[in-house]
Structures are given as C-alpha cells and as structure tokens.
Amino acid sequence: MGPTPAQKSHGGLGPDFFKGPSWGYGQSVLDSGAYGWDGGFGTTWLVDPTCDLTVIVLTQRMFETSEAPRVHRDIQAAAYAALS
Image 1 (cartoon, helix red, strand yellow):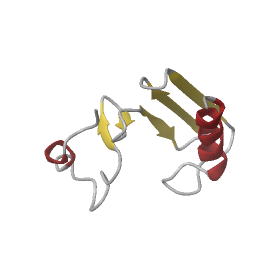
Image 2: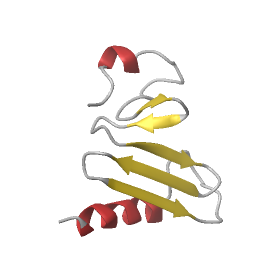
Image 3: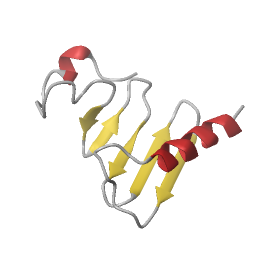
Image 4: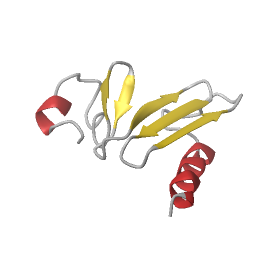
C-alpha cells in the first residue's frame, strides 16, 4: 500500500513532485508499494515486496535530468517481465 494523498501533500518540493512517488527515509515510495531510489550519479535501486523483486542498476554516467535514464527503466521493466 502506497502513501495517502494527505501524506503526499506534505514535503513541498514543487508542484506535482509527489505525483506517483512520495518520499520517506531517503527513498521513493510508489503507489504500488514498491520503493527505491534514483541516484543522480548513475545508480537506481527498486524493491517490490509484492513481487519479491529487487533490481539494482549501477552505471557510471550522471543523470541528465531528474528522471532516471531510459536504460534504468528498461532494466526494471525487463526484471518485471521475467517474472511472468
């Protein structure tokens, strides 16, 4: 279970910052209950307890935007697809 809308309304890092994810204890918490971190220096990690899944991606390339690069999202998607 992800955070409630009331929980997402606190924190205030700009409009729509908590649209989808919210944050707690230095990590992103998604509406699905998965949690992790997109680090701007080329790392991401994701834990999805519902699927018993952990995905760690380590690169040596700084993110160009605040969003993880496509390769990180593609690897996470491939990990989910492998569960099917």
